[in-house]
Image 1 (cartoon, rainbow, N blue to C red):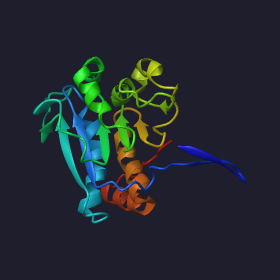
Image 2: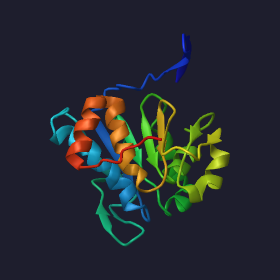
Image 3: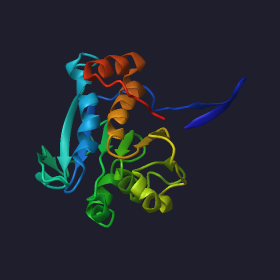
Length: 211
């Protein structure tokens, strides 16, 4: 992000706010936490179904064709390690599976292929994967409180008192239920506050907070 001086102090400019997101990739892997995924998925899928932008689509991309989460629930991926070139937003959940994937160079190189020109987001320990791929270098980030120490070497600063940390290209969220807030936050970041309020009302989610 870029800062400039203003009458009331520094003003932060986010070049990714309002970024034209049309295709969203959700990355899934064994032993992820399902709520990390579906909390954000539910808000973001409504961008199209509620006609905020009917052109928005999404795709579930996995490390395997069938992914079993950390409770035994099975998710069917629509593709396995597909080329990410056609997508505008990448969403990475967390879960115990991230502890294995941080040392899986196929996964880390795959995430690195996303590059620095498009936005990406994580929930919970998904930030460990983004950090290992280099996206958190020089940036603040957050994660589940049980993973603060694992995240610390991978970023500039671990934020322990916010549910969502927005560093422009990269948005990270805290543990599990923070995925609900992250999904709505991303709706506002890319489609505006009115869209976020409308979708939150349809979800009957009254506890939204980025703080």
